[in-house]
Image 1 (cartoon, rainbow, N blue to C red):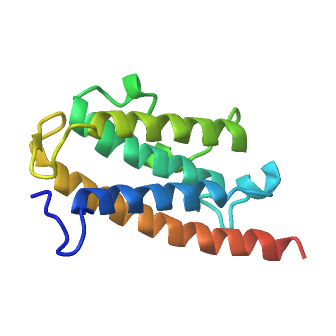
Image 2: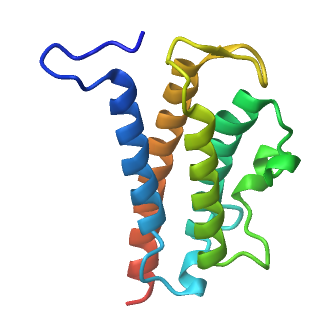
Length: 160
């Protein structure tokens, strides 16, 4: 399943890993240069803030590259039990704490995925291939990156 592209030693797995890393950088950079107030601002009632979306992306990785692989419960992984709570910022959350939490999740994800092939089946949550985990996380990160672009634009516009 870890097929090579015709003209290089670059694998599908390496391509997925590269794309995940690109999204991680884009997601965390969405907070660059913002005040805590800007990062927490909600564009509409009951809609997530930039900080909330970044927090949610860490949750997504923690669930799919953590719980789904290891079987460890979300609370043990430092994640909200309910998905709805993953979008909500807490009083103690800050740009620095959410960035640090995200980076810890990223490192755990890298460790959990090390040595696994795309065709491998993990049973931590329910049986799934590693390929299905990657496609789920990539689609979530892409969607959330788009959401962050919109929220960042709104945050910058509201300062004028």
